[in-house]
Length: 241
Image (cartoon, rainbow, N blue to C red; front, side, top):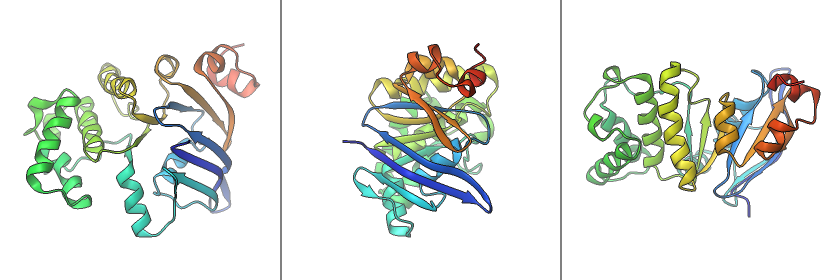
């Protein structure tokens, strides 16, 4: 049984068709890397799965429930599927703890005391227990991204969508964020990640999806995709002959 089912999904912006019939099933506990050139539709695909973009054709279902564009369905979906963006999107006037508490109290209507206990637990999980009272401008980029991950985890999602979560970070901070994602994968969290970190995709992911010009161009286990790319487009992207 797939946790996320994507069937013939199409999406256009004006005259430009960005997703040209995407088919992809994600099983519980899978860690899938989505790779490809800029403009191939990777981030748009994640945004469609989370209902941030409405699809023009096809269907998406999460845990057996069809994604529909009305507010009630979108709210139910976002309780199940968390999303972490390139930019951390933290509220600057709230502490790290406050940022993690807010979504729980607003979206899930969690009582404040429970939300605070969950926030402390999740910040500890990403290695930031001591930063509960720190404001975003007192944190490094890597720490801010880990707060964003804690915020997503506090909603207790069944899957996480990660959109190039390290691309806005200085190189020395990338490892600390990937270490947290690696730990989530080891714990069995279902992850669908758009990433440029090829070594991470090779080492941690169960499958790799190569997108090219709005289509799933190749898909397979990392050892197949990286060692034996089938198409010239993937060979060119990976820089292999």
